[in-house]
Image 1 (tube, one colour):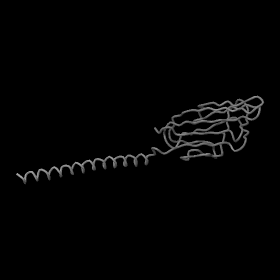
Image 2 (tube, rainbow, N blue to C red):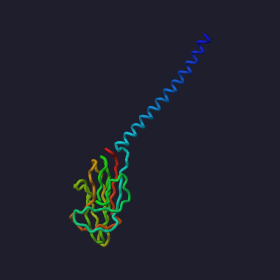
Image 3 (cartoon, rainbow, N blue to C red):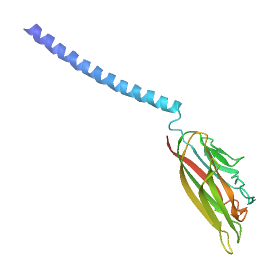
Image 4 (cartoon, one colour):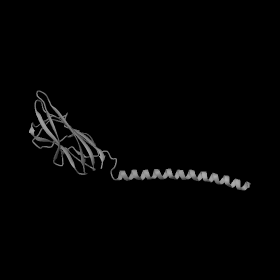
Length: 176
């Protein structure tokens, strides 16, 4: 009887240890699954930030439909913006937010637009009498990898875009 009680007690200890080992294994499996999922997401591009901001470093006199080349990069995380062309190319599918502010020359007006793949998606009017005029616009766009977004001068109005105060910014809000 004593021997049976001792064995029962020892068995209870083993069962307790087995439960602890089982709980530890379950926790390790959850951690391994999370690590595998995190690695898989990083390999296909999830979670990589994409954002840029650029400005004009000097005043520009443009012709109708010229691209405004914001040549001074403030930030370019993800490398989507090209300061040589003034164009942003989406590195991944997703929803992006674009914003541009344009300052006109003194006592003039200028009309510009945010363009996606040669299609106008937002207009910006900048102008003032006896002053510089500032205009801005924001647009959220669903882009596919390789889609291109930029700002260009329109036909109407003047052709002078003031440097230093004119900017173009874009950021990835959510991947598709």
